Image (cartoon, rainbow, N blue to C red; front, side, top):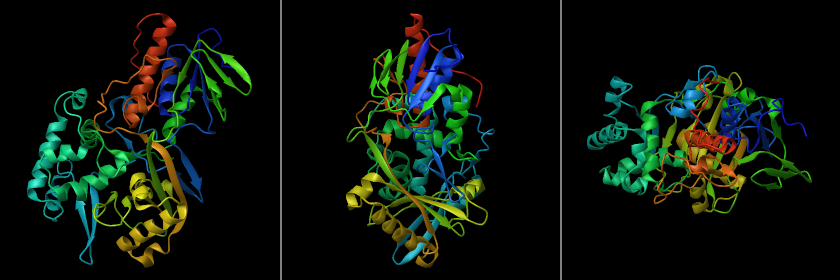
Length: 435
């Protein structure tokens, strides 16, 4: 079996070509380690993959990249990937009393004038706006790791403690963070909420020109494609050996860069992607469903990636992506592509008009299992990845469900690997050159 060209150094195998495994491999290679990555899929990226369908770029679930993540942004060159950003804030749709209202929620710190104007649109009370401002100031203070100290209740309870009204929670925070956390009850730990809210306040949500796959592909090229073996199903993983295709393959160390699939292991999500003649939003915002908590609606938000990156759709067409959180679909008893598509079209027909939505062609319906690890309250989340086990393990399930969690876990795994290979407590800072 061909390993790679660095025949003199220690040989390390990494099972899993997601972001955590790729970043771990990049660090180890920069330290002169022979690294070979294996993955059962036929492409790198794990959950960060993009398909080309009828001229559209369709990400594996609705994805954005966050520029405020310290570790990820120290390595990823967003400009080189041709990233363009969503506008901060969101459009919020409200269907009630036989009326359809669309309101714009703007971050007043980034767009003071538009933020001032949006404060009078009736979406949030003046009191709620003041309390959101107080919440923003609170999470922006102090060191990042401090956001993971203190209480570990649910996000919903944390917002109540901060005295946000039910209207503010249900009509803004619920649809926004349902799509981020992939759960419809805001049961996620308040620690993760504080972290994500700070990242959203500091950074931008961006999309690469060539789809979300662009980041892992750039990492793979830096590692060297000849050091990555795709389409390989691993039968057994040991600390210094892999068994696949009927043979045992020996290494100085093996790192496991994935979570074992098991019942209840993570959160699932449905995304329905449409080919539309024109964008129904016509702005660089996502659209939140403010009625998610009170009726049989299932779409938590809609985005039009081609409004941000025209490369996501052929000229003269728009890519519309609707997100349905898995537990919401399960609660409603919807468990098939056909039913999900029907209910999503029903929701969007109410928002944009049945006549408009009827002209949209369905590109694909995705049901993604274990899209994020469970990060419920009481798990005592930290910003320091777990490890110290055999084999060494990395992935966002070892920290928290985010790209930053994957990067930090990959870095920690590389540090543990170097310590074991060198027989000391080596700690690495990670490569500084961006990709």
